[in-house]
Figure 1: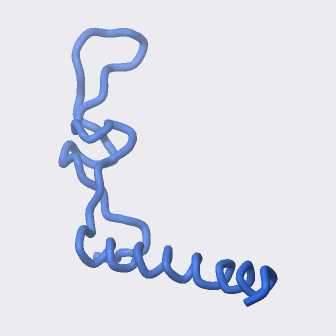
Figure 2: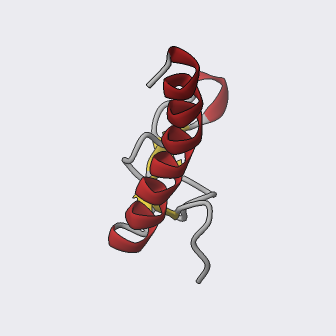
Length: 71
């Protein structure tokens, strides 16, 4: 196998394997932690006020549906 063939094979199989991994991940774990609240479900009040509020994007559930997965 020449180096050109090896690079071509790697360039084709690597994206396919990464895509298959993500498809399996969407099937096995359809939800992921929400980035904005860092998986806590709460965010601090703006402008330095004390306290916290529920994250408006995940509604305090801590989880968001993965991209590529439909409800």
